[in-house]
Image (cartoon, rainbow, N blue to C red; front, side, top):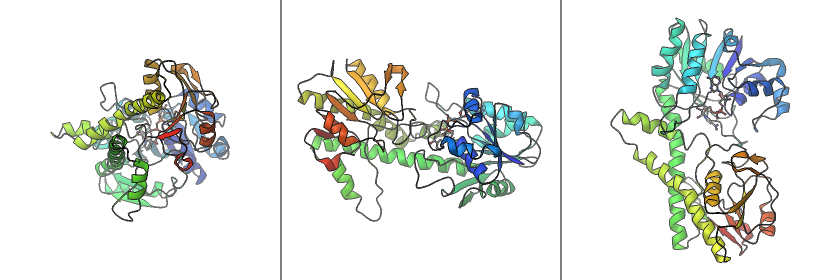
Length: 411
Ligand SMILES: NC(=O)c1ccc[n+]([C@@H]2O[C@H](COP(=O)([O-])OP(=O)(O)OC[C@H]3O[C@@H](n4cnc5c(N)ncnc54)[C@H](O)[C@@H]3O)[C@@H](O)[C@H]2O)c1
């Protein structure tokens, strides 16, 4: 018996490797033949999974575009994307596509678990009808559960094994089946009464982060006007041993999760005559941050007597977060776009992102420029060296504070 994983991205591939490392045979399915080609050559495209780690479980893993190969699997874990469409409404296309394909592949007795982040009701109202087109009945002929993925790419202190796993099955027995399977790779399991509780718990986690980041970002803009150092404020407040959790300001929110997931709930809430104002407000404040950063860039250049037009601006770190190359919704992209609109001569340095084809740019070493802007602070990048080569530096992440150099400005 094997574990099937559908969708081999940031979530699915680490999960596949975790099961293989626990001694399970794994069948990984993805619609992207290029990814399948890479994986079958033992080449990982996810930073958290070095290729050697993938190769060390090659005898227990097989990767394919053919969903029918899941027919013999004991459990099928679905990790496909859940983006927003152009109107910023949930796009269940990949998920429903995967469910339709699975309806032609699932077998009696299997367990199906959805891991993709989504609004409450997706598993029961959207997945069940499609999977039941197989002729099998959910909760009777096959088990079905929702178990949100909590992976945080680039993080090393918590892993799939050490991060508690929430599981909500369609029935008690579905929950039991899923707990048994996840118990093979996770130390701590958190059963909840329904898939809806598990779906909403994941959204609460992401909304909590989004709202708190927005709060500190709003205060950063105020502190800037009041000439108060927001980083010192955050440091001071963080000394409270209870009732406070540290969040840091930054250039805005990026990634596949925080700028997207909260709006899955906003959309669903409308069906219940609710306007989720915290979510909307947080989104609004966080979306404003790249514009505030542009204002700071303009001010920094102004002090050197330069307009943005034709100024040579080096962006340091363009991915959305430290330690990874993921560019989805990265605020640096918005900042580059806005600088270019103003005639700025933009270049960038990011060891995780060799090129930005949409801007016709390749990563360069920090060097000659009018202003360096630290947008994402990757470990391994020598920010002291950036300060040494640049005549002026704007640090949007507070990583150069210890240096106390007069040519450095903070967010
Ligand atoms: N990236 C994160 O940090 C993170 C963390 C927690 C939860 N999540 C959630 O997990 C889900 C997956 O996110 P991700 O970051 O891994 O996305 P991803 O884009 O990195 O990977 C998704 C993979 O699914 C494949 N795919 C798309 N449609 C498919 C289909 N019909 N059948 C098979 N494969 C298909 C894609 O080709 C891609 O390889 C999303 O719902 C996301 O919100 C992501």
